[in-house]
Image 1 (cartoon, helix red, strand yellow):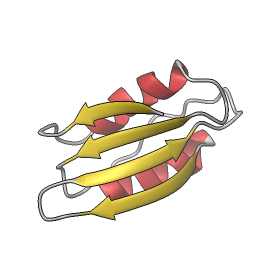
Image 2 (tube, rainbow, N blue to C red; image 1 turned 135 degrees about the vertical axis):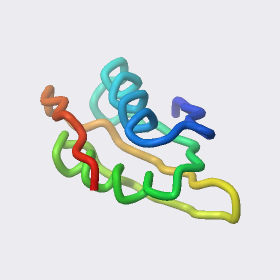
Image 3 (cartoon, helix red, strand yellow; image 1 turned 90 degrees about the vertical axis):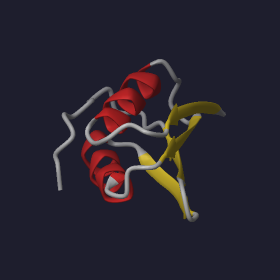
Length: 83
């Protein structure tokens, strides 16, 4: 599993960095994204559904969220939409 530290970044930067990181992974590989932006969980849900990736888990703590994404087989890298 690859880890991406996007703490301190505001939308849309965490999603854009995750999109780039996922592009370097093979289908089925996992990406762990660490974020502090409170809108990130919803942004990642939308991104994954549009881009063909699978959102494995989201765990929210007091000061950060851990998001695990499984890279899909789709080559489509849709542009994230702000919720």
